[in-house]
Length: 177
Image (cartoon, rainbow, N blue to C red; front, top):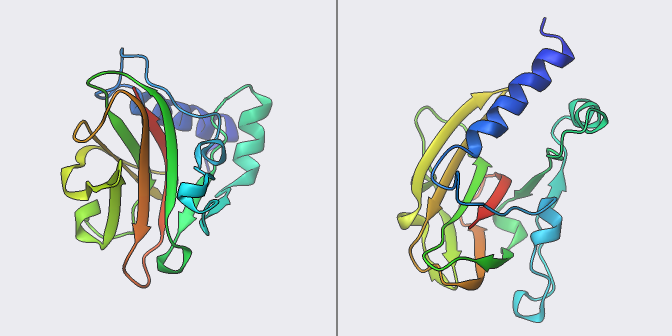
């Protein structure tokens, strides 16, 4: 049975891998936590029905005690939860928007295999999301995607909506540069 320290090292390596793809070396941004990025403006109708959950509080608390800055939260949504929008400020000219999520299980399934709408600045972008990484560890299957299409300099909006009954999307990271 792996020890907590070995598990934390694996998690840190995964997090380090996340920052090694197309945003690496370009000073990517990310919020301290997902909740701080949710758009609660009147345009977003005050927020969302999506819920912040901690998949493994014991590991998260131990990681925080060691100074690990990722709070391990997931933002979970279903068809009944409506839209969630993230307000991403300070996007560079020619910038990139990306996210990682625990995609519903299924051998070799990708984002486009489910009825999930992704909006970038109000335009459908799920078909334009480039697959970056699939990290299967600790009982989850995190997949990461990103795009430069429809991204503009300054503030951008990244939105998600589940359109298929029975599908749960668990967003773990949102990043931009």
